[in-house]
Image (cartoon, rainbow, N blue to C red; front, side, top):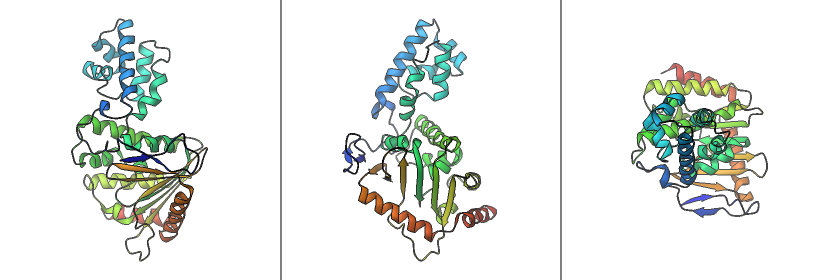
Length: 299
């Protein structure tokens, strides 16, 4: 069971539990198996009607948009979730006048596992993001190769289409760093994460280089929690703190394909205080980047 925020509830009220938080674990899950499938199906039907109205067969339409006829068929039948660039190109080629691009945001949300969709929406609209990671490099810092390696290790196995969709979706979240104003973002990463060679040494090298690249952005602070720290307030596990443009800070917790969005003020305040302590126990940002460089140099 996944717990997500009740949009109708007042500030500080308890989160509301709903079903459907197992999207990350199924290897045969298709868009129709999860919430959000309706908009994907509706988009596909609209796409087909507009293509037929334009007098284009799938092969010709695919050629004009840069996709195969089989892929176009998958989009029209709601079996695959189209990316934003396809939606924009299709709208242009079919002269849809915005009928397809109007659905782009909702279709985009369907790329994410059901349990992460609310968090993805809040993250994209945040003014502050604070993340504590102890299992893997946070998604906002991952490279394509690192993300693909993580998804390929899932058990039960994810199918190739799902892996590609989630790789694209995860990397698209990093567009937040190109926004202005960009959210103030802070990461605390356990040292052990920097040594885990998921996907191999070259993949690890690439993600460490990406950490250094993003860590030099003015709105980003990255800290490392050394393994030899005798005090570590993060023993309860990883979490993310999200401060939206409007509203109170929210905490996001995730484990085994299930998630919780914590909105209760007292609980969020306690998690926020814990993050402050974790930051004080970790290496300072400049020291941390030097530490990452050292790990990188030893590979």
